[in-house]
Length: 409
Length: 144
Image (cartoon, rainbow over all chains, first blue to last red; front, side, top):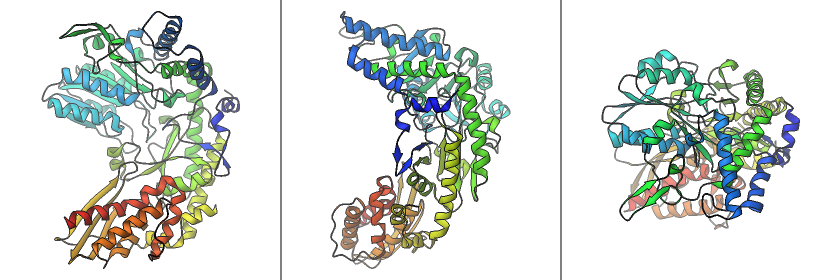
């Protein structure tokens, strides 16, 4: 894997920000897009733009073939059994909300349990809070170990025969930990619950095999894996999706409309009301081709090395607190941190003046921030186009930040 | 480091950040207002006492970056002893200044003027305005 070759395929990286070469370390928020994806979307609009699954004209057929072709690429990417199990959505948030509003509302009763963890993103908390309010179900949290990891003993202690849904992120957007979702799915199933996996931070960075994980649902976003914003995926096991009602109604998703009632199309289209995100889906297909060509295993290994390098270098900065496990083997490619006496917003502003983009704030994980006893943190996240040089510049920037704030006081 | 940064992190701002004025909470009987910035998690709690249309006392508690906390400290200093309508007017002037708009330069802003550099950092404007928005909301409620 030649990172410099890869970088050349991302036009946005070749620019200066505030007089310095851009160092983009915010891929966990959204990844940059390679030229192949940008050109695929452009070509779609220039050459075949048409609505899908309607009409008989040639462009309509080309657009439909490209859209459904992208679905097949997603199916292979996650090793789903059938494209009927692959629903295009607006992103992880919409995917999780669909499971909550359709599956959970229909299957949960008062006293049933939904189990999540303390490290979840708000989009894997609030939909379940709302289900609990509507159905009388109870929302329970799996606690975290000292280093931010989850122990299977705690999972076993929290999941009970009353549990109907277990929903866990595969990779934490704050702690960087990789959760044992396959083992958690097994525990969920032993208790008669279904397993939902939030793959927003894992799908871009590691191979996912839904049959091997044996998860019932998987949600992820395109924009974090080199695809455009506005496209995401909900994978669901066919036998579950078949019994679920759509949550949006209108064009595209119907079989037949009568005056007082209607019937739905077969899977997956019954969940795709209205004109779908055609260009986005085709762009996601191109992103998958791009990632496959490099190889997810190579990407994972590269990020792993970067994480290990970053942990080592960043630890040497005076006053540095790093959140999550310090053992790089337990981590994906991101490091969340704080520097003593400097608020993370100030860290991000000073780094930005150096051309370095990091995220600062609560990362849409307020319950986790509470557990970490931090109101906010800064985060540097890495992807296939980042280099050790980027991390060196980050560390240099952090040392300068520390000095800058000691000087002004 | 760039001169832009120096324009943002002025000495007086750092002074207010490190040694905040009027930090704490007033005891019962005073008006309390809570506000947060949901995009970043900054939060502020403001307590104040108004008598005869004058802000007799004001204190703040909160968590946030140097800009939000120093702005809160300066705000309390600026409105203490002022008439409610003067305090609200000051808030409008501050809002204009921080957004880089023209503002009434005849008004003596004192320390607050140091925050002018924030207007060059659009991502940080909300940090600076949090305490002022809380004050405006609180005083408007108090008036009603």
